[in-house]
Image (tube, rainbow, N blue to C red; front, side, top):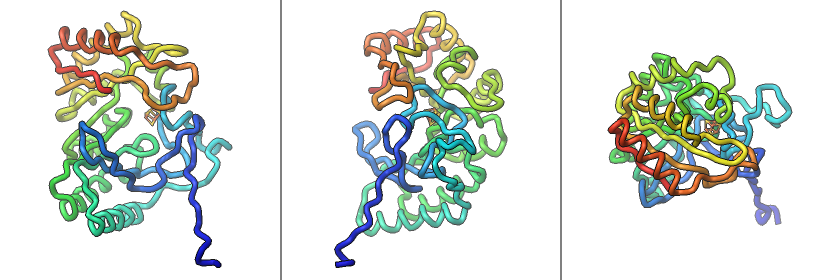
Length: 273
Ligand code: SF4
């Protein structure tokens, strides 16, 4: 009878009811654009760990340290624990012939907050070389930590850097991304400008919060022009946001925003759906 009883592991949900990633390795998720994309989550699996609190976040609101909203006292994994968990997942996937086209560090919050980020990248690259040597590596980051030398070094060891920039003025960033702690927009823009081959990802919303007004777009375009990324990807929400009053931006407005950016800066700007 005992053998018939299986442990059912339910995913932990964010405040918006959307599930968090439940392991250090998740996916791969298939998409036309990227093929089989494997996610690496160096962060906890029972709460979001981020220094932003974006109103559109798919994982809901960011629970503060020590608050009941964190629900657990789960600690960040040590580097050896994390690398060993990633390695055993890679070994299992290889044994099952799981295809992996790209490996992306992201997970339940901001991955550069992992305290051994540089060593994590170095360890991940070794595992990639051993198990999936043809898969490029990348990261999705909120850009808040890229001014720190060791974070810049880790970011630049990866093949791709997709860095967030949702506005070019501090007031809009304050409203949309709600940074927690000592955030400085000027410092972030300078760090992004100094980072090798950056792709900027900018998410636009309307409804209870809005970063699509003409003056906001004007300042965002000026920030893009300052950073000079290799590309800009413009998109809107497609998952339940933290704030229920948010709406996605119509495709024609996203295209207008992308066209303005490309015409003014000359940087290739695409709408992602
Ligand atoms: S930076 Fe990403 S994980 Fe953090 S709150 Fe914003 S959308 Fe969520």
